[in-house]
Image 1 (cartoon, rainbow, N blue to C red):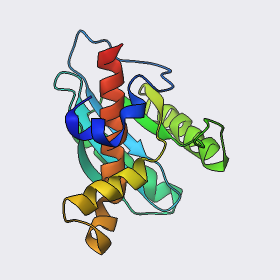
Image 2: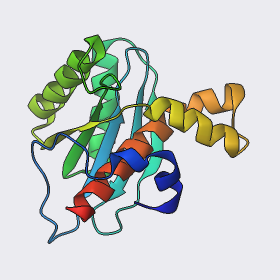
Image 3: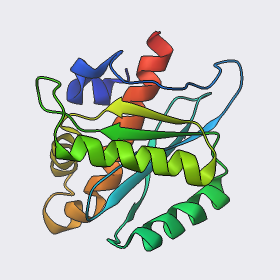
Length: 165
């Protein structure tokens, strides 16, 4: 795990719910999503460098608008793999948003015919807000970036777990 994320997420090394994984033998572009009912944060990275970076936040509540924005990102970046953060309680039990995030992951797989991996995303939004505050991007300015930074934390933890395996 890189040093910045080790401080944020020491508990996530090796944690996840991989349904499908990309072969480590070739470079693959990966898009990750921090699903929310109001916004979806998006991050991007590749399996060669294994470094995630925030990409954008989709700020739309209508399903069609959300998937149109995702289709545009997929068309632009041509990912080989998608990663969706799945929220659970601290003890690992599921809640309402767990089911919604899993449904979103199934919809992505069905619409875009790409492999989708679900991974644990406990506390990523709070960690993203804390990281933004430490970097001076807290408050309103940070709120606009919070979901895409949370997606970055999700993707980086997934990269780190894949590398450790």
